[in-house]
Image (cartoon, rainbow, N blue to C red):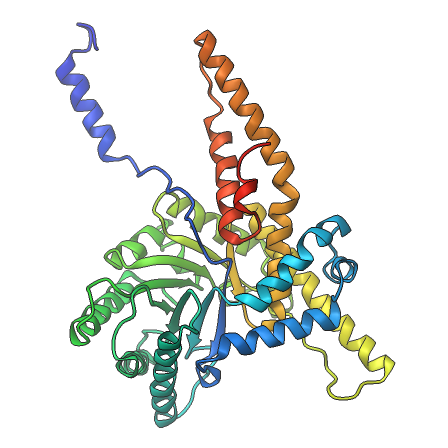
Length: 414
């Protein structure tokens, strides 16, 4: 292959050195991936939590967006999009509203006496076991303990021990979400803990996964200006499956005033970009943070017209904020985010489904054109160099199908 000026042995050595630094090619989009993760306090968790969330989410949709035109008005979305997704959203809320769930012993649970947290850890583990046995658990699930820090590390480890002991094992694929990750040692400790739990409960090694909460500047960049995320992931010894943005802790840590903290803040955008760029091709999933505006009206019971209107305005305002955040994340290439209340789920699915439905015709036309151009280029021996565009289009179809926004029959170009 090489001429006398370079020499085959020299070229072979150069190529070997190049190969040592190569990152694995980007992973193909998964056949299925959750579009959200719902965090709920451990004290509220029960085996029928998904059914309860379904009822609450449907009640919110039926009260504030019972028709496609009402959905368009509530979310601030085009009427054509609402016509295309309203029935699909309602079916999703009735059938399987929660795709990923965390039993939360951190912010959603708060500091409590040790005896009380012990009781809730045992009860939540037993309830999860019952949900699994009855087929009531969501497709993906996990637990978030308190931080593995000097102040709360012992408490976090005890909670996890009691929780898994009450389950009676380590369910395959269960996720332990680690908050406030700042150093590789924290992740390595969590991996050691899961090794020990799996041995003690006779589970296969690697049954449990880890997720890392990115909530501080040092979770992203160290004191020498180096990006730290790849090292944090490596410290998990193959267990880290995702990283989640803790937007409000991150912006607070950087000195942003509470009134200015939001998912769209430039610091959150920078964090998401660092997460995507540093973990591209690793298979580690990235999730955006939560919209904190809750679609919960202030009035309960029998309402007069003014109270009903005020409730409607509050819910619609929160939905519009959530809808905008989900659409912005999808535009950035982030396909999962946090939900904190079942009434947020209509906005989550409306935004996700509309994103893919609105882009379907254009994506199909572009993919068809790309294939025609590639075929002509092949016939004349020309180089077809738009492979990146084709990969992006194929990923759009795969992600749309995985989310439930697109049907199998719509995956091929017309």
